[in-house]
Image (cartoon, rainbow, N blue to C red; front, side, top):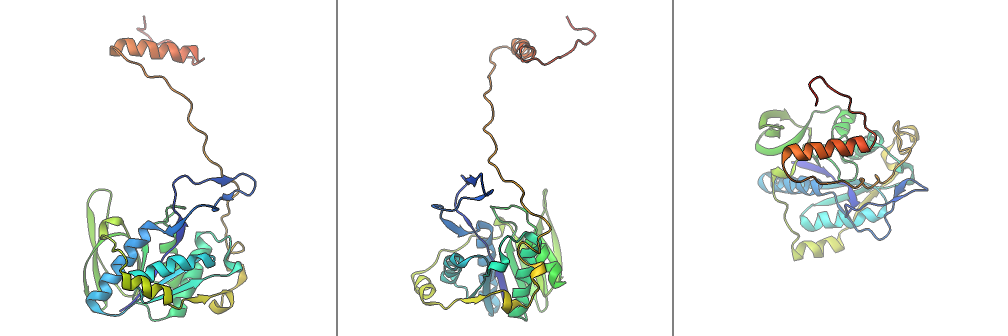
Length: 269
């Protein structure tokens, strides 16, 4: 069983600040982590490997500092880590990112299962997993909450819905994006941490993937960020207390004082 898990390094904070001049995230002083949803993808890949034997490879696209996240994945039990890093990949939207990752998977070759988290917490698009599948011309299933059975070239699983779930069957190769209900990620062992420090990571650049500059990075991104800003803090409010009828009168008075024309309906006193 040859399993690839695509991961992304993201800022470890909910208090993201924006540079108003460059419209980019301010990353200085902000620790980076593996995207939390991707941790569940890593864990599921490792569990399948332990049951059926095989190999788990993590794949990520980003700058050189992503190596720290790749080593963390190795400390959990991943066999190999590959970084796709090149200035030509910079500025990629979800379409260009999914194409680059797909080329990396093609270069790995003979892959059965491709796992990802359902979305990244810094972008929240949920588009990269399906995009990779489309570029590879293979099936994909999103929001996987449980893998029931793997039998030969088939996998039976449960896909989470807003109310309940649906059981599906797919053939390999297939891209699966997982939700947090699927498992509980493990912690790295001391032996795993030692192995991660010594592990040799593979880095592939633009020339290694054999793709055109027109479809990678900023050049291959039909969607671009024109402006990023921090939403203004909400205006102050007022809390009304007392009897419902009195509170309604106070509310109406406040609205009228604020210039809102409420009109007059038939039957109003």
